[in-house]
Image 1 (cartoon, rainbow, N blue to C red):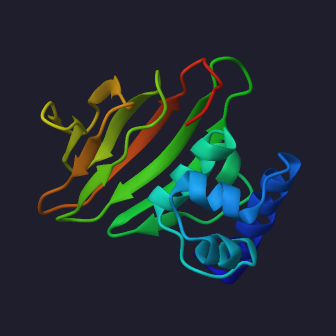
Image 2 (image 1 turned 135 degrees about the vertical axis):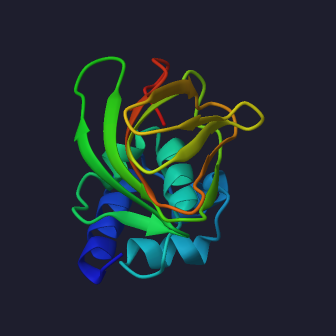
Length: 176
């Protein structure tokens, strides 16, 4: 993530935390990250993982897209790039993302909050995705929808995969 995006994320994160009247220690502890890492992140430094951003969104009770909405560049790590395309304004909350997975990528995703569902539509390449132990292989034009409130994964083989990911958050709290 570039310096401007890190700074933007940090300011937005700090604003959301302070609106709730929470200390750095409280949010860091609840999200399972070091206070020093959260402090650096709020100052526009560090290199947050996608999982760290997800955990912070869960603790702040906001959709992942709400936390990253001010960022205009793709977020990425370990062969995965994700960019928010749009956020719905209704209930339940629905976010749409563009996602690219490099060749030979395996990403294990932590469970999202109860009731959250993901729909993946493959644009190009080949992708294995879904809940651990119940994945399916997608080819271009195919879509899979699954409960994302359990561990799930994304796996590519020799070619990259490009897809559209739609996340529909559970209605209880509309959180990621």
